[in-house]
Length: 312
Ligand code: SF4
Image (tube, rainbow, N blue to C red; front, side, top):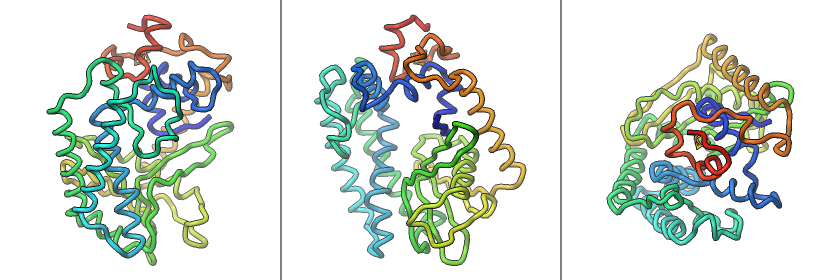
C-alpha cells in the first residue's frame, strides 16, 4: 500500500473517498467503472486548478530557468500561465467524463477536468477572472519573496516535484512530492513548498516534516554524490503565495517523533481496514462515509458513491 500525507487526510475526512481514489481508480484497468473513477479522481475545483497552474509554471518553466542559469522573467512566467489557463479551460469546457474515450496522459498539459462542469455548476466568468488574477498575483509574489528566491538562486541544483519514497512498515510505502528541493554547496538542502490559499493560516509543518524525513531516507541519481542529510538539518520553507508569507520550519526531535507516530498510526489504521485485500475483495460499503455531510458537496466521487449507497 502507498501512503501519503494527502491520502491520510482524505481517509480521515471520508474513508470511502479514500477507497475510490486509492483502490478503485485506475487508468489502465479494463473495467470501465475503474477508468471512470480514475477520471473522476482528476476533477478539480477552480481553486485547486489555479494552484496547479502555479505549480506547473514554477516546476516546468521557472525552476528549469534557474538550473540553466538563465532566469525566466516574471512576464514570461505569467504568459506561460495564461496560455496554460486558456488551453486547460478550453479542454475542460469541451470534455465530459461520460464521453471521454482517451487517457488523460494522451493530452499532456492541456488535460483538465473541473468539478463544477461535471456536477452541473460550471465556473462563472467572475470566478474565472478571480482565479486568473490570483494566479498572476501568486507568481508576482513568488518573484518578490526573498526568503524563497535566495536559496533557489544560491542552489547548485533545484529539483521540482520529485517523488520521494521509502518503506514505512511491512507492505506500506510512503510517497511524497515536495514542490522543490534546493541542493546547496556547503549547507544542507532546503525544501520549499508553495501554497496558493486565500487565507494561508494553516501551518503546514507536518506535511513538510514528512518531506524532510522522506528526503533524508531517499537517494536519486541526480542528487549530489554521497548525499546525506538528517531531517533536523533540512530547512523547510512554506511559501504562502497569496498572502505573501513565508514560514520557516526547523524540526526538533519531538516534532520528528510526532511525525513518525502520525505516519505509523495513520498507515496502521488504513492497513487494519483493508487487511491487505485487493480492490476485487472490497467494496465501497466496507468504508465509512464522510463524517460531515458537507464534504460530499465538493467530493469528486459523489456520483458513484450516491449511485451505490445513499451515504447522506
Ligand atoms: S460523496 Fe460523501 S460519503 Fe461519498 S465518497 Fe464522497 S465524501 Fe465520502
